[in-house]
Image 1 (cartoon, rainbow, N blue to C red):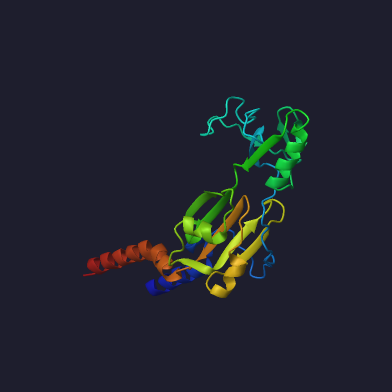
Image 2: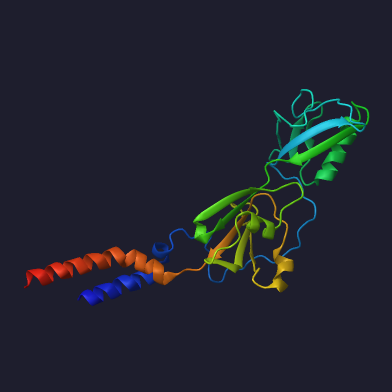
Amino acid sequence: MYKWLIYIIIIAGFISCKVIRPNEMFKTDKNFEFSEFKPSEKEYKIKPFDKLNIRVTTNDGFKLIDISSNTNYQQNNRNIIEYLVEFDGLVKVPTLGRIYISSFTIREAEKILEEKYSKYFQNPFVQISVTNRKVFIFKDGGATGSVINIPEENLTLIEALAQTGGLSDNNKSFKIRLIRGDLNNNPQVYIYNIYNLKDLQKANLILQANDILYVETRPRYASRILGEIGPYLNLISTVILVIGILSL
């Protein structure tokens, strides 16, 4: 009777993956179609909800206006004010009001603002940086998570993994998922393999703001099942021992 009980517990453990691997994330169906690989754009394009640090000076370095602080410019960039790119791609800046800036690269946006500010200042020089570009990385079945800021010189998949300590024995280097786009509206899901050198050309892509990297993990069903049913086995052993003692 007790053997059958143990068998039932083990079978139930195999069937219920949610019990064995409750921290697993971003599960897809068996026949899920991953997005096709696309070469990364070399230059970042500004998007709605980006936060921008914008500074305006003259080409010769003479301070005209610093719209990020409205005070004398300091090299340590204290009291920086960030300007939000609104849902429709507009950003509200001093003097100019709302300007459409979404879908342009940093270089293109700087040129646009320089042309507009030239009506008010002599030889304006604009510097723009995006301050809230982040990547989210989950490893070990979702047990560990990290948030990395994307520097202005961009960040590749390999660099992001290196910054979070690389991969452990539990991680699958040949199954790294990249989730990109609006999570509420059919985001693109890519699968990458960095196990072989020949696949690095496709895998070492440039990450974009709000990308999610999920490194699949080895299931280790045996150890997990033993961990789940261990307390029950101990209980059964105790009951059998007590019954054995009482039957003497």
